[in-house]
Length: 286
Image 1 (tube, helix red, strand yellow):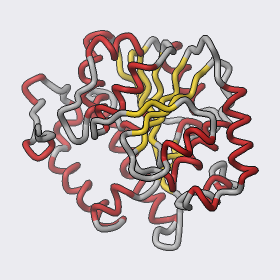
Image 2 (cartoon, one colour):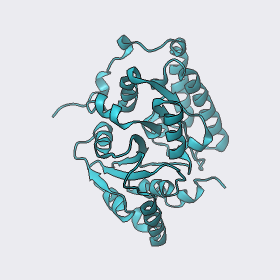
Image 3 (tube, helix red, strand yellow):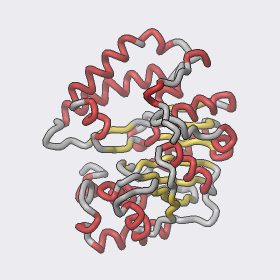
Image 4 (cartoon, rainbow, N blue to C red):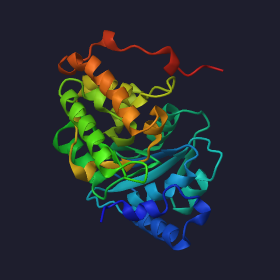
């Protein structure tokens, strides 16, 4: 049985429909994981994630990690019961009123007590050795940041073979890119880094997306950004980005076209002059 199968029983379900015994189990297990002196902070951000958060926290509650950890939450001014789910599961929750992933990530970072900061997205589920594997990579390989891979669960609209092909092509491209442009492989839902260094360089709050890749770029002067390909660090998430592209095949062709167009860049390290903000990605000041 896939490790995430039981979590799907509450994924995409309203919190009110969750079985009380599941919530109690998650609360109990998270309580036993919480350390007063954590090596790593597991920081969950969410905006209107009531239908996904319980599945995420359930997966985190079953982490098998030899390092002391803490699990904290950031409610990015949600309009649903996201904060209630954090509370019911016994996760200390900090409310960030400024909208945007950058503000939410920064809020979690500012409240972190661990030496390492593990980014977690509320709509994503994580395998039981995920946190340990990421911290292992940071410590043993002396990295300042590390990213891993992610996948999607098959459903009626997305076949197992279609997802395997899509993920295999994407993973291979990211693997090639990781040698010279590791920051380009970073995605927020699977990124871990040194807490103190991240506070030193800061997290951008003026862009809609890409704050984690920007953070990875800012960390590079202090050390290497790593890439973990182990299945024990492969998260499972929903179809948000794919749905925005118009489906699995449409998403594949959009990314394949861009990948082929920029294929020559894979072997060339990023230069500072290559970093440009797109006007459409800038948050408008009120």
